[in-house]
Amino acid sequence: MMKKLAAVFLLAAVILCAGCIAEERTAQPGDRVFVYYTLSLDDGTVHESNVGKTPLEFVVGAGQMISGFDAAVSGMKVGETKKIRLAPSEAYGEITEAMMQDMKISELQESLGEIPAEGEILTVTVQTDAGYQQMYAKVMKVDNEVGIVSLAFMRMPLVGEYLTFEITLDSIV
Figure (tube, rainbow, N blue to C red):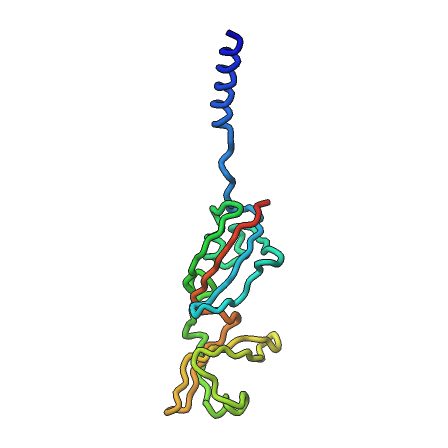
């Protein structure tokens, strides 16, 4: 009789405790997280990665990361890996008309020594009211007939790009 009673209490304890086991925690807005990531471009080249190095630390939903990356980490479990492709609007933004400027091919060739190819990104120094700043200029179009190169000036070299991230959530603090 004692064995049966002990077995009933043990079974009851197991059933009660089964409901007490917490679900695996997921990253939520306000959580400080540590992630490993690899960023690839559409042509397959790896632009950057911290895999095997120090994990990236940020607070989910605090605006510290590009919106698509932030949204992808929200809801991930520790140890989970996911691969996402972000449109420019979810990453560093679109190239706009305000960024565009035409330049004579001869002027560009004189300063560079060659005519850059369409899609090439140049590092340039520009003078602003705040002094000299480093920017990037993406060659949007080379029109040899007219002798003009159309450039998009931007602060980040990945503006207008689709980005693929492979993200692994290392920990949540």
